[in-house]
Image 1: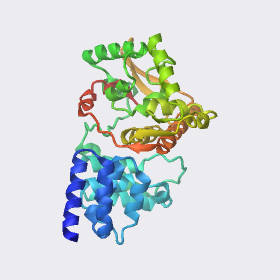
Image 2: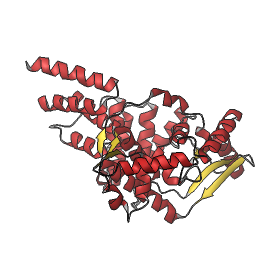
Image 3: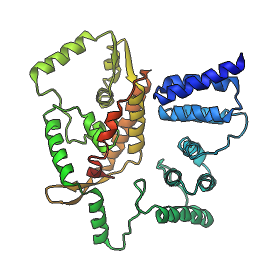
Image 4: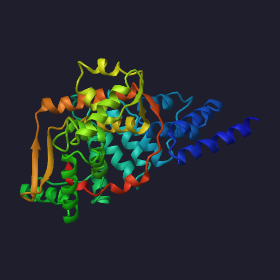
Length: 360
């Protein structure tokens, strides 16, 4: 019975989504979409699950393959539409900006949609463009003005004025100034990271930044070449040797090492039968690449010793190299067999403990 199968697939897809079993959810929703390609609700379900998995190009294919224009009826759908825009959509930049603004105007009271629209327009893609026509620029300025008036304390976007330089510095210092509790926590974490007795992924959980970005930027200052415990270091060597010619799990830090050794990457990967990574690790690599896409050569951070904000500058060559490494890391992750792994919700409790430590 077709109706019974349809209802069962809906239930299975919703259950898998509720359990964060995104691979299984995607399979069930794709089966549903095959039954009725005109079902836009199911099409959006497929797209949203794919975006959860970091499958942006695949999500765009699903959107473009619809037999008719897919309506955007919900805020999440608007954000998904913006997330799947590519450089080819920006060829006629003025038309692109106006289309993004039109979509954003459907949800004027949704902070995330409005912020995403601004991000989408300002998305760094390395292409030099002519200034927008005055009318289009005016529409975009109005979008920005309305956002900052409606949500002046938004965690997504914040506006600062450069009319008073000292005032600007004070505002930026206040933005990243840690509390006493955060200082104590960060000192303890930094010491344990330096001793290599705490997983480096903990730094990602604390700051809310991707683990890929942490390891590529060497956010803790260094990445230890070996474990502080000689016995454990030997155990690591023995485990690696025992895994040769077998399937192994590749984590983000290992992928970053391979990405940093392009001349040896093929040889290293070839030592194992198959590389396996998690859906979450691949999504982390996607986020890391997006974070480094701007190729920013300046970072505003807090100097705890002098208790003031501090601008850190790196060379543009290094900034470009960091982005290239993030691209290579994502390529390595995409070359692995992807396994679905449930995320421990308790990790979310760590976020926000040190979010003021680093602003770019």
